[in-house]
Amino acid sequence: MADTKIQLLADVGPPLKVTSSLENIILSIMAVAIIVVLILFCTTPVSHKIVVQGQLSSNTYAEPLYATQPGLVWNILVRKGDQVKKGDLLLELSTEVATVQLKAESDGIVTQVVAETNQSVVKNQPLVFISPIQQDWSLELYLPGTAIGSLSPGDSMAIRFDALPSRIYGSQVAVVKTIAAIPVSAHEIQHLMLNPAEAYYRVQLELHDGCSMPEGSCEKWRLGMRLNSVVVTEKTVFIDRLLKPITAR
Image 1 (cartoon, rainbow, N blue to C red):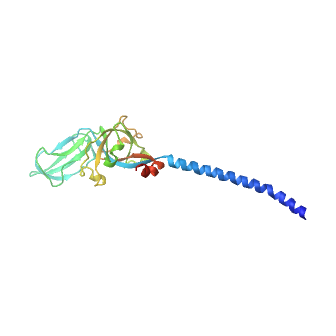
Image 2 (spheres, helix red, strand yellow; image 1 turned 30 degrees about the horizontal axis):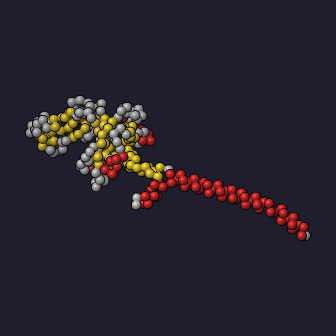
Image 3 (cartoon, one colour; image 1 turned 180 degrees about the horizontal axis):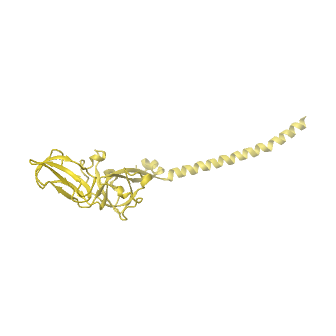
């Protein structure tokens, strides 16, 4: 009986040692893996980004449509961004004699409507401005003062239009041309619903290679269309943020 127990113990002993060695190897691998993950986590750059809003504008000169005689603006049939053809009715004036119809003198896009319904106007007063259909497009972004140091002239940016989903139309590549030295007025950007407590600076972008969106996309561009872009304001690593309170002393 004693011999049998000794034999059983001899049979059980070696597998326990093998199992213990295997566990140590697995634990060592896990420890190394954890260390690698921690190193990567602490040293991988993290980008801090903000979404900047803007609009599509034009460098093309707009021709004004004048009141042909004094009267009262009776009916306005167009609004900013509308595309019109020569002969299209734009506005009606009520005068002492009759109702006068003002029509487009050429094909174009309405860039501004300065007249208002029931407004009294005098002869030769500009009422509507129309630009040629072939536009010299300009892209404008409004950069918050807290991110003014994030962009420089010559930087490339990917622009997306709110009305043209990027998953279908892609994005437009533009280059920063100028960054204004003074902020824009709150009235000028109130339609963009930006933070009223923040100062915003106009960033002018230019298209070096024209339209870089899929064919036909630029035909959908309209004056005043809202656009946006992502701006990287800062790049940091976790370890720097962790040590910043210590090194700042």
